[in-house]
Image 1 (cartoon, rainbow, N blue to C red):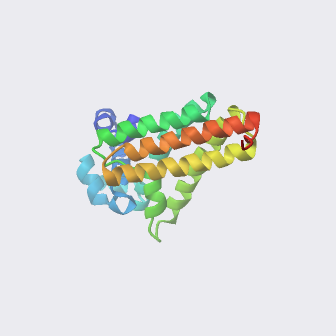
Image 2 (tube, rainbow, N blue to C red):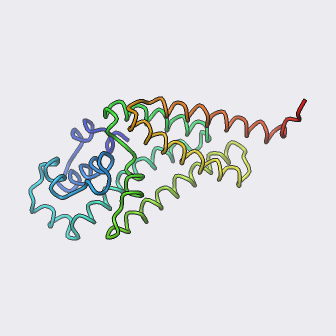
Image 3 (cartoon, helix red, strand yellow):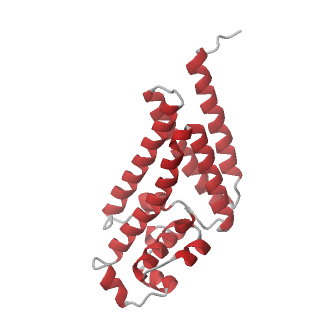
Length: 210
């Protein structure tokens, strides 16, 4: 995960000029959104020569943006997929720990690159919304499988997956705006209560009043 989202680790592990530009674009995307990913900014941060843009990315800025989004999304997806077998609650906790560390390390500059692409894509960049939707779909399916592993019915597992993604991604936005991890911790606590409550109801039914 750090290869994509931690500036220090990214700088130490970069290889080719092309890979350097893609990881740099992913950094800019998470910090400034899709509109902030300009060729000039990528070149300035990566130190790549201007001619490398047309050599490695003949379709220009849109190609750099799309590949950066795919790269960032796939890295997060890999972490999610690796944790699926441990169940939904474990996966939620892992996601929370990851974002707490990233937000603090980046001084609350880092956001989710997939969210940035989904909501910040311009009319001339429809491919970004498509790719972001596909990544979110994969995360939803993975979380659904995790909750199914916990014994939830398919419909409950699917709705819990959507709830968790929406709540956690929203919490990350609040953390950046307030410069505090408290919103993420609050949301995590409520999600844990919800998940455990749903588990109780599934096993014992809805408690009767009195």
